[in-house]
Structure formats: C-alpha cells, structure tokens
Amino acid sequence: MKKSCLFLRILSLLLATLFVFTAFSACGEKPEENKKEYLDISGYSIVRRDAADKRVVNDTADLKKTIQSELGVELTVNVDWYNPANTPDPNAKEILIDKTNRKESEEALAKLDGMPDDSYIIDVTENKIVIVGQSTTGTVRAISYFLKNYVLTSEEAGKIDLSSGRTFTKEYDIVQNIFIDDKLDMDVEVKSTVFEVTRGYVDLLDFTYSINTAHYPSVLELKYQKNEEDNGKLIAIFCLSANPAKGNGIKTNGAVWESADGGATWELIARPQETIDKSITGISMAHIYELPAQVGDMPAGTLLYSGNSVNYDRKSHIGVWRSFDCGRTWEEYVIIAKAGGLKEGIWEPFIWYEESDGYLYCFYSDDSDPKHDQKLVYKRSKDGVKWSEIYDVCTFEDPDDRPGMFVMTKMGNGEYFMVYEYVGSGGSLIYYKTTTDITSWNPTDPGTLLQVGTYRVGSAPSCIWSPAGGECGTLIATGMWERDGDGKHRMFVSFDYGKTWELMANPLPYDNKNDTKETDRIGYSPSLVIGADPSVIYYMNTTDVPETGYQRIQFARLKIYEE
Image (cartoon, rainbow, N blue to C red; front, side):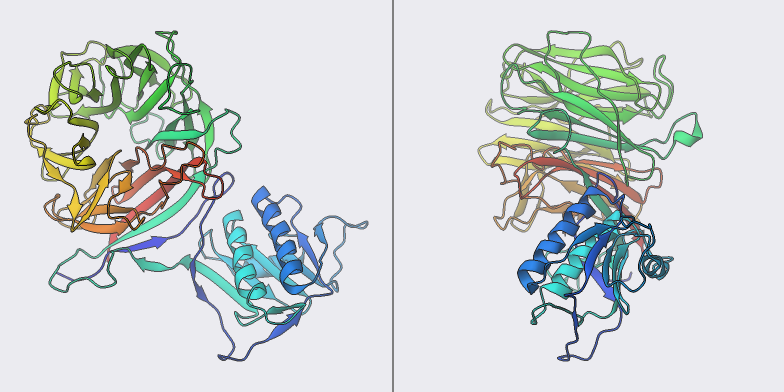
C-alpha cells in the first residue's frame, strides 16, 4: 500500500451571499531576489465595475484608504461607465477592479481561461493595473493579495512594489497537510486520500429576521426526486433565534434554503411554522431528511423536517413537517412525542429510514424519565404517522450523567456508528458506539471516548461514513469544541471503521470562545452528509464572525479521492 499523508485542498468557490478565505499557491514570474521594481501610481485613478458586488465595493474603498495611508497618494474612485461619452480613455492611468468595460480587463480575464472560478489575476500593463477574478470571490481575493503584496510591501512613497510580478495569477489554494504533525510516522500506513474543499458562508448579518444566533444547521443533496432535474439540488435548514438557551418568549424559527449550483449561491425558499400547537413559540434543533423509499402515503423523495417545538418553561414536543415539492411548502403532519419544559423536555430529533426492516426511526434526547437526568431513545413507525413506544439507546445508572445529541451513520461493514455527547463528571465529551442491529444498542454501555492522544472534543457531535477513500471507506467524526487548549479545532478521520483515528484540521475553522454577543451556539450541531456521488461530503456548521462576535452558517464541499 502506498504511504502518504492526508491533505486538505481549499478551493473556495462561492458567490453572491457567500464569503471566502485567503491563501493560494501562485504561479507567475518574479524578478530576481533582492531586486525590487516600483511603479509610481500618483497619477492613477481607481475604476471599478459599475455593477460590482458589495464586497468588491467595500474592498475597493479599503484599497483607496490603504493606498492613501501607506503610500501617501489619494486616488479617486470611479465606476467604469461614468464619463460623458461612455467611452473609456485608453491613455488614462487606471487601477481596474473587477470585470470593467476596459479592454485590458477582458484581456486579463482571457489569461484565466480554463482555471477554476476562484482564480484571479493581477496584470500591470503600460498604463493600467488590472485586478480581476473569474468570480466575485476571485476578485475579492485579488484585491486582498494586491494590498498585501503590492501596497504594504512597498518601501517608497507613492509607488507600489512589483516584486510579485507584473503579471500574477493564482489558481488554487495551498495544498496543506491537515494532520497535526508535519510528518507522519512512516510505520503508520494511511490511505492516499485527498479532501478537496469549497467553502463560504450564508451571511446572516443582513437577514431581515432579528437574530443573534444561527444554529442547528442540516444539509442534504436531493437524490430521490421523481423529477430528475431536481436531483442534485442542495437543501439546507437552520434555526434562528435571539438566544435558544433562554426561556419562554424567545421565538426560534426555521429557515429552508436551496442551492441549484452546488452551494455557490443560496435562496431562502421557506419558513416552516408550528401549526399543530400554536401556543408553542417556535421551532429549534432541526434535522432534514429525504425519504429514499415509500413510507405510508409519502413517496420516495419526500422531505422530512423534524424539529423540537418548545416553550422552555412549559412544554416541548418533537414535530415533523413534510414537503412534496423539494422544500418549497411544508405541512406539519405529526407530533412524535410530547414532554415538559426545559428540565423535563425532549430534544434534538434525528430521522433515519432503515431499508432492512422498512421502519422510519426517530432518535432523540429525553429529559422526561424521572429515573435519569437525560437519556437517548428512539421511536419507529411503518407509516410515519403511528409511532411505537420508547426504546432506550443510552441510559446510565448515575442520574447526573446525561447522554444527548444522537447522530448516526451506517458503515460499509454493516455496523451502525453513533456519536453522542456524554455530559458527566468528565465534562461534556464525545463518545461513540457501534451495533450491527439498529434496534439494539446495549443502553448501559457508554461506548468509547473519541480521542487521539490527549486530544478530545466535546458537545454537539456529528459523523458520516463514505465508501470513498479506500477498502474500508472514510469515517469522519467531529464535535463542537476542543479540549487540548490550543484553540485549533480538529476533526477525526478513520480508515478502518473507527478502530484507529487520525486528526485533520476543520475545513471551516471557528473560535467557539467568541461569545461577546451571547453567541453561544458557535460550532454547534455540525451537519455532515454524503452527496449523490459518494466521494462528495457536504459539511455545514455554525461559525463566528470574528470582527463582530455574531454567528453565521458556513458551508463546505469535501471531495474525497484516492491518488
């Protein structure tokens, strides 16, 4: 077997409401070391595309300010169509931002033909400086690179530094080792597997609903729709509220989003509401699932939105909404279980259809049993309407031990792999259990602590298994926060069905100690799901906006392939 490290490739391919991160590998000629070339820009103006995205507009303004503060040159900013004759002056000295109407912008873009959408170019011609990307994402990155490597590195007033080259293109992000150590022990055999990630976020700061938190994201790719044109679309849900941990009166509601371009852009398509019990203030702790087969009167392709409707001081219930039109309209059609308020409630449903027995399962956390502080349970149904009695998954003797937040995946060896948070004397740590029988979990067995060396994670777990990546496929598990104290959140990867584990960097990094605005759901309840192509894993999580302390929903596409 070939010995290799596991790598993470960041490709960042998001537009419109999506934001991106920096760091690319570069190609392009550079002058000889220690020989700097400068260009005087004191006679230039900045010209941006008239219909530029607001991020480009803002970054262009920042570019102007930085040039003034760092180089001592004050440049005017114009849009490309703003002149009396609507005819560009070919002799004007201009810094062209984005896809302007200047021929130099078109010529520069032509040099990016065949490169990914996040590629960009910085091209310095006789009297034009072109800064443009294949997409808005690329342009934003190009501006950032120009600032860091042409403006901030300059040692001469009024001049930019051309050490990076008169023509500079960037195609891909740096391929970086995602293991903690730079080198693995050569005695350790690791499948030659690559994670290729596209990432960005749906920005909630401008969302019309007044919120401080966005939490419990859940995402899937449509696979079982009768209309083949709908298959391949992404459907994501998450919950919005002022603070989901606070009491009655806080309206927590769901939001359903659709992407028809692999996550590049997203559209809000629905806001499911509580209709069976209208005294409930809202919906939280949501999970979305697409039926792979007929269940009762619901055909394959029916979307199920399970959620926890709650008034924290009085009552809670697990409700299920269904949609027959890919998430555009929803009907709350059943309440699976009911219980009390915050201390006696039921939480965090997880829906699963089991092909082997034809049952629809709903796993959830249960605070209502007086014999246990909390336990994990499930109910099941043949038709999705009539549900069984409660069956236990995790119940511990010490009443202060609280197992919660069940998430499960089925592996290629026939085993069901489940992660949960074990809140007890050791804190809130992630454990996992396996079984070959989905109805039998040995409830008093806590399973195994998810750990590599001294590294552990706690709270809000998630997991997924993909057949891609080798003989035993690829198993990923994660949680909300890290326990080794260096602030670098990692994910766990196994190539032998969970017998051994390696660590990888989180493709959507966040600081879950960033709670300056009561954002207590950062990193909370990440979602991992396999796409129609089993080598594709979609990942969605709640992350922070460092400069504000607010929360946002981030999305990533992980591509697994063997070299």
